[in-house]
Length: 226
Image (cartoon, rainbow, N blue to C red; front, side):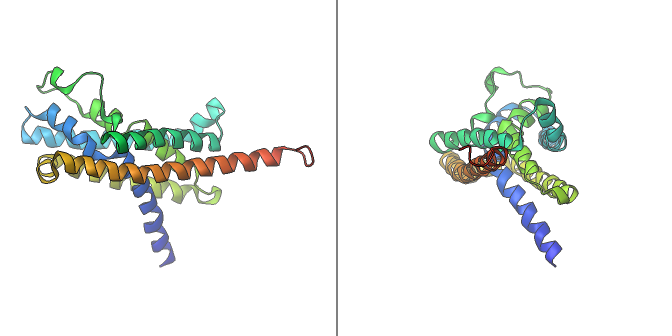
């Protein structure tokens, strides 16, 4: 029973941490604009492929994150602080602007030719769903896995990513219904709520990173030199 409880607990932490930054609600306007001339079947395929790509991107950074850290000589506390700053900036923009700028692309959707083009990888998967903020969250979570629980820790995070990607697929598939139900103001309100939750997560990342910086610095500083 304890194992099952821990499984749901840690998987829920991943979902709660990742869902606000991925925020599929903010991808709905872009998704609907890019696919409005497509058939219903092709729209579903675009949503499914975008979510599969988003999962693959996040899983790759989760599994190779430590290799990237070692290659560039980046410390774990540095990843936490940097991730916290990125997430905090995105969260504040969500709160004060009502939208997540990570879903924006260089060209407006109206300027893109809508035919049978594939938008699933870019811009839907990256940067909209699996943008810098989502990658920072995944790498930050991966950096906090205890040394003796690496396998189970990665499994929890991968399952959490799968759940969030599934939620994103359901959201995109039901985009027309959700937009009609919430309306413009309702969608903005949801974005602001998610922005607040994301701010709390960012502050926790920053506090954790700064604490670890202090611990590492104290361990390296000889006693009596301060």
